[in-house]
Image 1 (tube, helix red, strand yellow):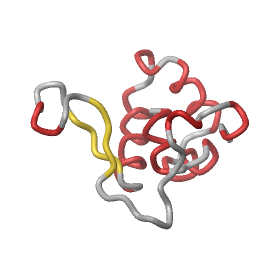
Image 2 (image 1 turned 135 degrees about the horizontal axis):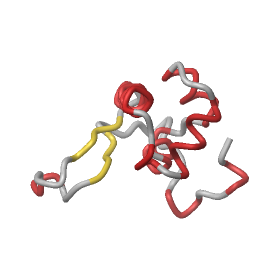
Image 3 (image 1 turned 90 degrees about the vertical axis):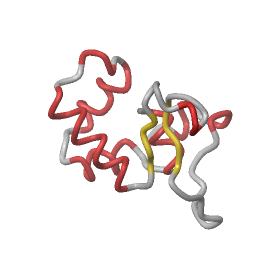
Image 4 (image 1 turned 180 degrees about the horizontal axis):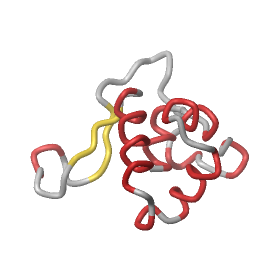
Length: 91
């Protein structure tokens, strides 16, 4: 989830607003996605998809394997590259 958020350039606050969930819920899910409430996980999934994320299932190897991808890249907003993720830009 954090990687998908980084790809879109969304802050935790922006994802919380887009999903209609409290910031604390986003933080908790990013720390331990496996224990999230289904409605919260679905709300975040929809918000990330609206921001341009595609979720790839483990059985779809045509797309490069399981994970998340951007639908399309824009030169104006490429988000934060994974190697640049750190506590300073995690807002």
